[in-house]
Image 1 (cartoon, rainbow, N blue to C red):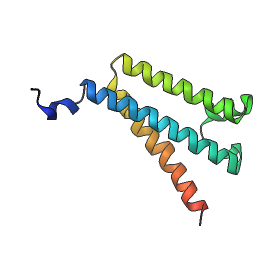
Image 2: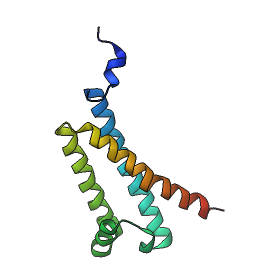
Image 3: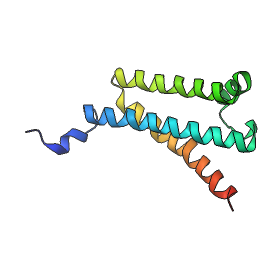
Amino acid sequence: MANSSNQWQFGTPRFGNAAVIGFLLVQCLDGIFTYLGVSMWGPGIEANPLVSSAVAVAGLGVGLAGTKLVAAGFGILLHLRGVHGLVALLTAVYVALAIVPWTAVFLLSSR
């Protein structure tokens, strides 16, 4: 029987799977937050110029879905290439630079 503590070590399949699932969940959450934020306050609230450009060209639903699908596709590609540490790092960056700011905006606007 394998040591269960080794299953979560960096570079193991379980770590890689957790990293890519976390990445995909964060992408979904960022998409939801972005959709709500842009719907409530307009496109000027979106700080990412790639997302803003896609939304300006294709509309909120299609532009946002397109950018999130591209991001998810690249995350999956990195996972399939075995670059799990980078996927985990990108997940943490998205949480810090997208999820936390959106959460702050929503919480502060409800006061």
